[in-house]
Image (cartoon, rainbow, N blue to C red; front, top):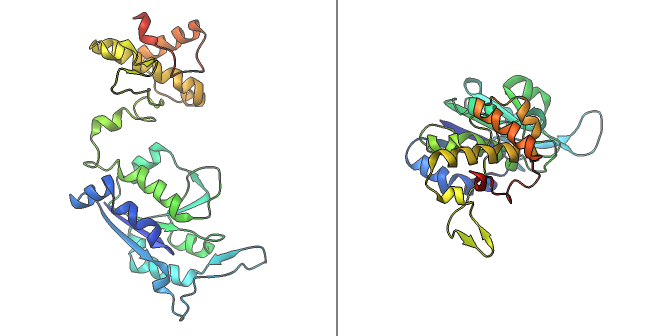
Length: 255
């Protein structure tokens, strides 16, 4: 996959692409990226890329001409082009997975009051929001989208790790996890996790997922594809009275 990001501030993005898992994926040839400075496509000596909004109102709007030339230069018409904006569709795991299948993804980072609507009409395939809030930096929003997408590209992260994450599998939140030492201060790792009994561990984890989802994101259960074991555990949780403290109880103690 190639990721092309159009921005007025490429320096904000560069560190992300040159670090950690992303850098390793690039070194392996799994991913390719290009950071494009929109100002390079302005034609005046001041490299102007914004102007006042027609009809009045506060703030400035990104000019269509420099951005349009940049989009043409990177082949946006032949790629999946995404504009990250608070007024777009909400980003979720299913959409990130869909984007991860593209061979070339072009992202447009907005600034100021956004971009001229004619650019959206001409080049943009998707308008995407990362949440119901407003940021001053389209670069930050674009990095959230990139991070959600690139890690799903085959070969970047092991399939086993992805399967156990939140919003994967049946669509539940991820279960709590622990590492050494088994006792930290006065807090102990749930005994079931150190028992070596794989069936009990799997049951504990599923039950913990259900309790955490009930506590923090109960609406997910309405659309989750729950196996029969999960439905039985939901009834068990209801009998126990549920839990608003999914991290503190040790469900494995009763196993």
